[in-house]
Image 1 (tube, rainbow, N blue to C red):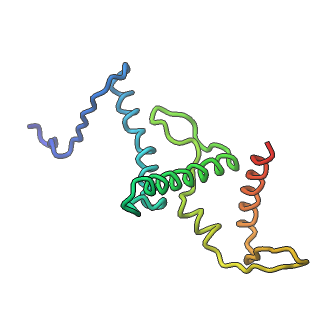
Image 2: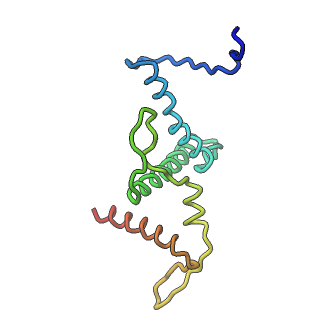
Image 3: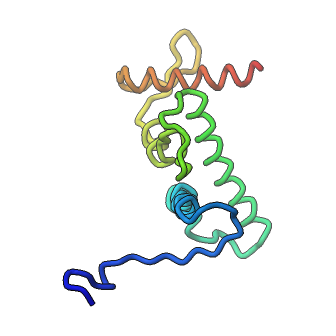
Length: 149
């Protein structure tokens, strides 16, 4: 063994594939799977798929479906409001930088507010936060546009 070189510092990968491309392209393709793995991790932690809620298969299937649907709706709504921030590369990163479900939940759902009735119309009143108001209006406008088409 040459001085300064050891197998302990070298990384090895074994990839078995039927893709018809060069080794570098296959490794880049494989490394791009990180985005999909992040989706599963977020569904597990933020979508609460880390446990099985019941002993009945149909109920668990509905729970899984509801969690994945919430995740997909969250992503779709963000894509409607924002422009893509990245371009396509060999690693296939997601084009948008998405906020996680937990962040959206804390930002919009877990907020202190009061239900009031000014002029007899039921209204949710929140503390003054211009940035949050702007973002919330963007999402509401996107939802309204989607409902009107």
